[in-house]
Length: 355
Image (cartoon, rainbow, N blue to C red; front, top):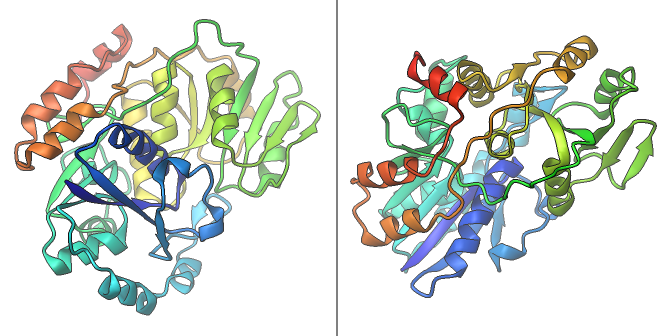
């Protein structure tokens, strides 16, 4: 079976999810998978070996400034003429299926050619009845037209009795993590703003990853690092909490490892606002709507989260794709949610979760 796999490249979360799928596909001899990424400059991708000879396109993206979507800069940065030229020139001949994680070039190319397609993404869950914040007509249009596919299979922390599967998280929990620092990943904030927030908290060690940092350096109780998959995963395992924007994948990994969360959603970004709403309903995060030292200081004394055991092996999903009936999502969803284990407090919150 030959699969075209389109991945949104603007955030590392989409790529992290695709890495797990790529590693699982690589263990099979009944699949050939070609990966396509769009949404960031080609030289800004890193740790991509698992994908083999992948392709990149400019695609469509969102520009941010100081923690919020910059709509004017976004309009200026996107080139619809280039986008449609890439779509028209993309040849999907020979593929049996498109798997899409919110990637527009492959989605529209498949739509034009009539190639069977399925979204397996966090964005897909928002086409169903799940908690939403900041929902409006523009968001509905983006969900419908940004990367359209024939079938939508959502990915979320709870199923909400919808065609939604849990996230796959590859990391095993360490028996004795050092818990020596707080991990900070706020890529949409300015480095100087992050520094000003953390500098007064001299009793706490912070490890900060940011795309603007070019090389590791120490600044008192704050350590700064450039993007690195291996380094980031190490510091995630050994931290005692995570301060991050509201992206789905990092929160999933932190929940799986039992790390407490302080989440600052990207202003104007419907998905991140909705993620914070859901985590709050589940009792699994604290919120930070502006960079505030006092809120961070208060959160440092908060208890740890109960760990959530998410599935690690996507073989069930891959086998389901192979059998070809994409309309039968119930059996797949039921089988995958049976592998999820919540803590007792989280189970109680889920029983009363109102959407």
